[in-house]
Image (tube, rainbow, N blue to C red; front, side, top):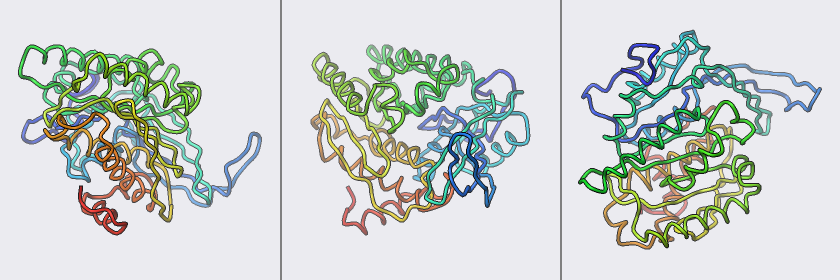
Length: 370
């Protein structure tokens, strides 16, 4: 079965019949690239010296990034029954990402028009209703009980986001009286509030994720749009974590790979990252690389955090402070390396690194294995 009721199986099912360790819920889009002379001002123009296409979409980007790092991942999505949708499915079949819960609908496939100037600055316009029509069926919801972590982007339609949150909360409640472990929950506040209205996750639901996600990620556009400013975002998140810690000093979620605890990271592009863990705030620098293309860097960064903080959590975490700076720093550093390497290649997914490439990158800069 698939994640929607409007098609039979799409993508290649897991041959072993096992649920992937990490489920990523988001679009598998086609990016149409225009290398323009300049990003046009209102009423202005530009010339495209090159036009090409590549594979993208936040959900697919995170899933493929984790797959490159050696993680067992699956995608929950919905594609269009058209040329773009068929291309997306064919591409997914070539990756290690499980496509059991990818549905096919009648709507035009989701795709993005990306204008990129010679300095790498971008403007993105998204069209196509296929992902907006995502509806989580019982099979997709049932799979969450057997997975270690669920990742969700704010571009997911609100009805789907609420069903994910309700499902994870139900699993957490059930785990109190059983030996089962609920999945960790990761939420990416991608896109400004205005961009998400009528299309993605609504502010009220985002607020619920802020207080219930094990990892909350937001970029330099989304955070100020939702919280009012980057400073207000940090203050609000830190305060919510402190209040949660006072009411429940123990880690409040536990994946099958060990305890997790509320963390958040706000990204600022080349200006670095702000991590908030256990109410404590820490600033980190981004790696300096020869940037070719920054598209998808945030998704690569999020995948790196999931790899280190969620999928790679160990039993030793329970013995640490909720804001153990070494643990926070190593996770952010690893994720920043994943993002930096990705920026050295064109398009989003071709440059996503393997684990050995990330380790070599860090070693060259004086950081050994953590």
